[in-house]
Length: 176
Image (cartoon, rainbow, N blue to C red; front, side, top):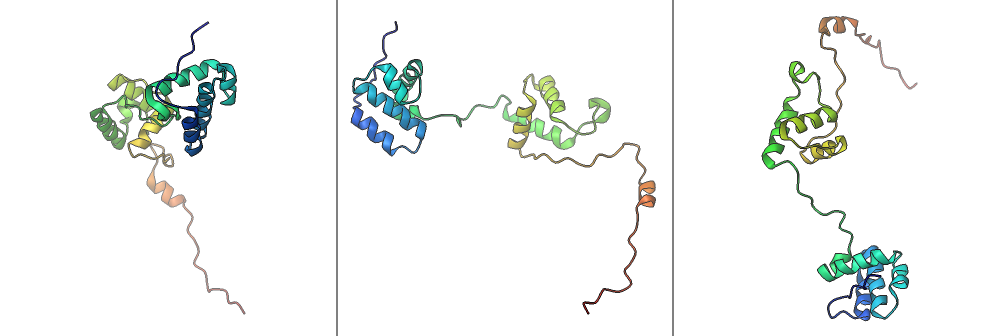
């Protein structure tokens, strides 16, 4: 059986409970209370149950607490991840999206995420999921706007002749 990881530092159970009370993050509070229970001498399995986790997860949180202190017990879901495209590659992608596809070269009349995914993989050597391409476009300042499709050999004069015109009203209706 693995040896229990000691909680490092001068922390007392009272201090950890005080931090748990003051915290605005519920998950951080639960983890602090589990660590406080360990410092009080409770066995690791019962202390983990207080925080709604198993013993191994408590062990992982003890490692994070020892490395980063109480701030390490917060969920870091919103941490910044470095982009896989450089700033120059992102700028080039912006110009490509703004220019639109060349029908003869790309075989499409408008960009779709799947098309941009293939273009990014071919040109920059970076594989993205279609959903991530959408997120990247949003970060680059684009929004999803879908134009009404237009057939390439559509004749404008035929369309104008086909449109119906409104008849002028003879006179407004009175409220009498």
